[in-house]
Length: 319
Image 1 (tube, rainbow, N blue to C red):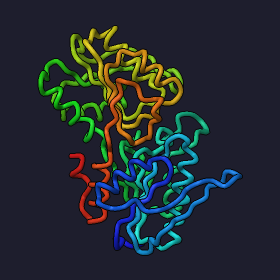
Image 2 (cartoon, helix red, strand yellow):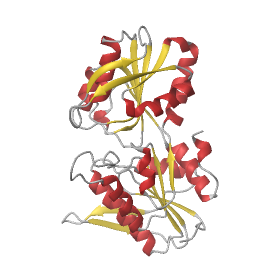
Image 3 (cartoon, rainbow, N blue to C red):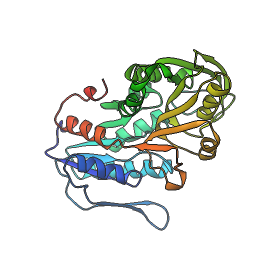
């Protein structure tokens, strides 16, 4: 494996073409030409239309819905670049699917997050660039370098300007105990106090709010999470801070807008005044509500890619 390719080449599969184009544009590069489609039997067909020999290749692909198709596209592209003698291959995965299956929660469970890590490595990836893994410990599943960007580096500045006008009116809320570290960092960046919602999960994709740790009465609440899937946790948290805690209004933000199942309808009926998401996952227009704001990740990923290519540390991007 070369430590450094001779030039940067940005490729995209089918999950994030707009983000990939934005990243390439920020770097002053064209998006490289390739076609990823399917044969009539459903197998993936790949055509790369330019040489990658000796190049520093970055392939942009989130493993969002349809998860398995997008994962297989990424693996096949990585394999093709390896066989075409790319100097170095970096998988740029703004959203890392299967991240929630990171341990055995019950007997005979698979640890799919580890399996995906192994598949990426065996396919030929030399490095991974991602954002807000559901469990940061997944970094330890890889035997290759992994750069882990933080969504709050984009989300916090968006809210900070608003909070600065009346900081005492706002409070940051973690929707569960697992998100406390992220919410604490967010609250520090925007200059507010922190509250925590203690909930008990009955089964997958459901949650029951039990208690609010902290005072949210008459506050404007900002709920911070890494992802919104079915939106059960988010909407239950919004209900709790209003109905139980006496909050004045609720804002929410998250890095990954998975928005599966009845998520959009739940958000539509909730107390949430504004929901801010990043475009790590391409959200269809029919799922975007009037109170949703989508922020772009292209700038921070372009900076990270430029630093990786130049052998500079990526950590200054999220300090």
